[in-house]
Length: 171
Image (cartoon, rainbow, N blue to C red; front, side, top):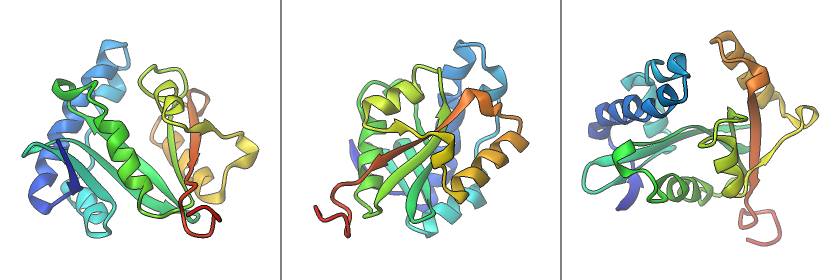
């Protein structure tokens, strides 16, 4: 499986991956999340053109990650793996690829108690941020999620520092 930047030809496939990955949420009773529409082609293309969209492909994409800079860090907006390719560390490899982009840290928001969300990211080195430690951009993301109907009490912000980033003294 090869990790590479997403191409414009990949974008419709990313939407299919997102729909398929939603089945995990349906299986645990979170049908509203499972039925949520994937990002539009235009939105995905914005990430791609910015250089913040990667796929795991063999040769067609089976997993993807999109991210954007937020408050000097790289915020993972979405990472999805097609269920037929689960448990191959593709999500972890995509996250490591995003981490290699040189930002001081990766951040994300996710469900606190869903096993394939916050507990998974903790195994990958992310830590849950205290609400007092949220940057202005992360606060805006949380408000946007609440506006879209995601219960903030069920969600957390997480961060993984990048010890190899320029300016950290180790990179």
